[in-house]
Image: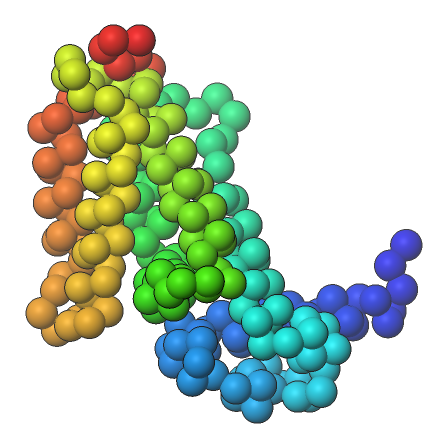
Length: 200
């Protein structure tokens, strides 16, 4: 049974993680300080290293939490039938998540040599591609087009749209861009229920 002290500690930890995720997305990892996180979360500055050890430990914990949120949002529900429309809805939900902005903001840092978050980013992309690939394999695809290659293309396009929108929100309409992506995919893989891809 969880004690009151443990419950309070868990609540404080979650408040710190939520605040850090918002700040990393807004300001980037390097520009965010423990003081910023303490002010945003309402938790004392000294509690942050107590929970996470270091700023890098906090960052890794934020990404772990974010990966779990992505997996939950993309999880298939019991009895759910495969369709292109459901895949499209899932993609739209994914790019509406607050965690997506975090992933895009921290991408440059993840690409740096010896980055502590590179492995987490590989895991995030693996999760997205795997989810997309599983749906595409249950739809009719043209001969010679693999679900894996199409999944890479869809995820890459979606991330690119989000990056452009973050850089110039007044010039890029993400909803229209994602609608165009859906139309392109629909032309490649006509909607069908439970159909297997060619070549399997």
